[in-house]
Amino acid sequence: MDHYAGIDVSLEYSSVCVVDASGKIVREGKVASEPAALISWFGSLGFAVARIGLEAGPLSQWLYAALRDGGLAVELLETRHVRDAFKAMPVKTDRNDARGIAQLMRLGWFRPVHCKSLVAQETRAVLTARKLVQSKLHDIEMSLRGILRGFGLKVGPTTPKRFAQRINELVAGHASLQIIADALLAVHAVLLREFNGFEKRMRMMARADARAALLMSTPAVGPIVALTYACAIDDPARFKSSKRAGSHFGLTPRKYQSGETDYSGRISKIGDAAVREALYQAAHVMLTKPVKGCAQLKSWAMRIAKRAGMKTAKVALARKLAVIMHRMLADGRPFNPTARTTPAAAAA
Image (cartoon, rainbow, N blue to C red; front, side, top):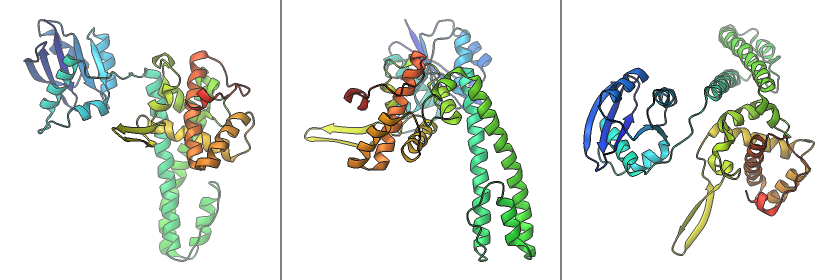
């Protein structure tokens, strides 16, 4: 008789439940959230487990890779699907979640998700750290502007290099404001130095990564967009069709059809938000800046803008870029500006 297991991962301890083919609970327990402890626990059962479910989360990819290497049949489950399956559960506990995941594995009511490679995870970690430093740098600048505005001191347009000089000019002669400015500008200087370091590292990583270099042949796609997309896709072969890249990153409209009701809504916004943002930024640059080598793409998007608005056109172009860039990765070919945009491709 086959057995199935579910693991609800927490920081210190994970709840584990094993059920048989009829759904009867065979064994439960609390195990340390460490690969060695989990492998040892399953090894002590005395029988093989056909499938082990592990909900995607902060520790899941690390545990998934280690359990796979340990010879266990582990599946990484999409969090959204697991959450929807448990909505009818009146009492939510780690123990009940493990039971529910085990039942999902038994019934086959799950969609496995891709576990990113170590290289992709490392790239994403650097991108996340860069984004964090950038956001805190922006917060410091906006806070200084807001504080000085309360005293009638307007910073106005400036550049990163002249920002500190402009602040010091405005607070000269104001003892209290000078103390505040000195403290915040010291933090600003450190953040700016580290952010510039991340920018330099991003360019170096993009030049060293063959996939990122390939993607940067696309107009309006720079190192950040290329690295963000490449590490999110990781393995192009996991998509049967390039058209699925748009829906995977939440860039396709929601659809509701029931009886006489049939309408399409806004984009779903499921999947990786960082990729959506990067693709939207690339589309924005392509449509608002004089970018060479994208005349056909730009003309296609501008026709959409005339009938539906510029924002809709940017989203459509972001979706189109997701499809094109996936095909570039799958084929290993650079961007082709002379490729025709057929009606079928335009709908992708």
